[in-house]
Image 1 (cartoon, protein in one colour):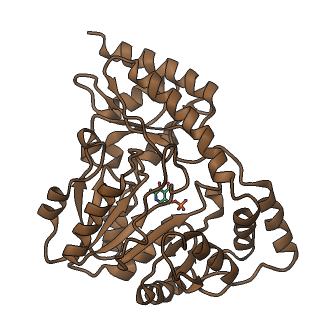
Image 2 (image 1 turned 180 degrees about the horizontal axis):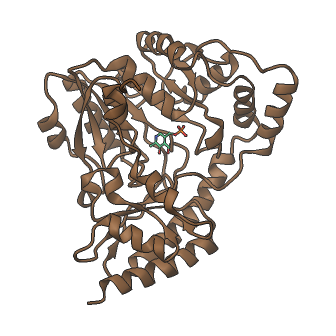
Length: 382
Ligand SMILES: Cc1ncc(COP(=O)(O)O)c(C=O)c1O
């Protein structure tokens, strides 16, 4: 047998999946970040009808013009002058991220990434031939990066910084003044901003704060319909930028990554945006209720401290059991019937934390929290 590429040998399966694969059928799962809702019925109907109407072919590389126009229109309140040329439909946020790293990163160059992180970022950068420098997002600073720390990491080979708000795994969001400081840093250093905003419409308080439309054009927004319309299995996302040259390059790259996105599904997503525009708001209300419940339960447990997120679908509490790592704690929880992700799956600085996705109903959340509480009490007992 021949050898495999250094590229594939350099990447590992993520720690989130590892736990998931060990879980039994009756486990209460706070594991994967997948909304438990189904997509809007109108979108499912539209998908069926689009296929019946022969929409089973390749689309243009950048995607269905009507869907791209609709997306541009939705974002035009933040950035004037957007058109379909500013949008490329991708096969998911995952594929949008890969496209951008392949388009912007060269061997020898590096990218600033958040830590704790969504586990795809670092491996994506290395697949693209670059290296990653991780900037800390600490519990003490509400998981928001500090510009001094970004300055200290940035060097002459840094080409881009990735921001992710609302954040996976921490649930962090930013204020406009945080955003302005982070944007200003990138502008001063001449960096591309890759802004992963896949949770932009899952917001519990105030408005989503975007990096788009703030007078800096070297910004690429990554987005997806996976979470906001509960379509994780549909694999539709997009890249949006006001930078025309960036979009031309992204679209060129897209051809070699997937040729185009799914034909019928793009019609279905368009229908969802047009006929079920309140769907993201409705599921956000349910997520908020769950978030409030889980944070209250967690903060009532000795050895557990949790911020209350203002968006996304995760909490990332500090869980202290002397002498035990987050992976060992997660394994004990799993043995007792609750699946969570160890903080260390999101980078070394996630150690001491556990990630819980509140993607199950309130009753299950309370049942899961009963077990969580008993397990942590048992482990902390001297
Ligand atoms: C922060 C973040 N970005 C991107 C993605 C990718 O989403 P998808 O590939 O389903 O569009 C996810 C999925 O969990 C995520 O949490």
